[in-house]
Length: 141
Length: 232
Image (cartoon, rainbow over all chains, first blue to last red; front, side):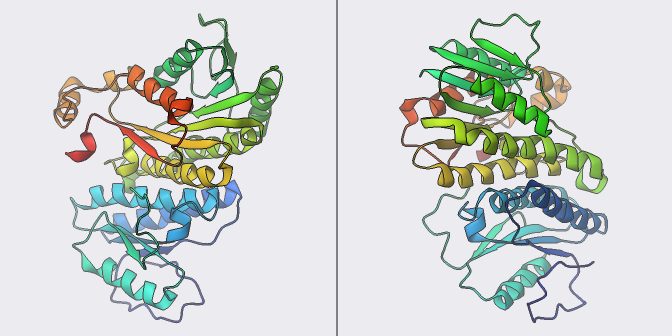
């Protein structure tokens, strides 16, 4: 599988880790970018699901809370819902789907390491895992 | 409440009941998007048939709203479609269609009409309990999750003048759900603590609550109207 990870992150992904890791882009307030981002997540997730491999989406906490505008909120929240549904489907086949939401204060390298741990875990599924304290006391259901 | 309210997906089901309910609650003009003119409608319901995924359709709704000599006080984004399939079998066209209508049209119409909504007005987006995840609905679930994200972001950007909330219906007795085979429907109902399907009226009542000044301190939230299904 081809993961989608920002070029700036200097952490090598071990080839032994199967699955699809999709790191959401910082898109602009343009519908076409929203649609393209969600479609890219779908295409990679479908390929993983067909190979019975796990899925993990990475989003920013601020985007999820709606603090970065509608476009990023739609994509990040859409990915959370997509992961929950994928998790239901994967549960019957032994693969998982999760989302990691990170605060900007957490280094991208640290985010990637946690994301890969969850992707490889095989037990955690359907979860939204927050990295950093930004979500505490906020309404995210 | 006095002014104009736009309701999309008003041709049938939940949207039709929302349009009827709002039209009956006061001196409102309801612009019912997707409504056919030949339907028997209350005098204060204005039918408009457009494709909300096109710039022309959005422009026609905007012009219709501006043609009334009263403020726009609300928008109910209800239009939606389903193309259900497991993720492994989901076609790219079905994925794009559901995202485009359920999320794209909601985003585009909201951003088109938001500048016209008077202070004190409200937007109510119809999401779905499926945003919490639903087998065989990757595209639909993702689109409704997107609607929830849009609700949060617009609640922040339009505050303090306009409130934005969402309603997430569970299994509601509409033409679509009544068409589900009885055996499957019975199993679905058995998983609902209130032991029945919801009614379109119950969704319309919740929409009315979120549109009205009664909910004047509520914004950016999702009300799940699902008979407790999310607990089981």
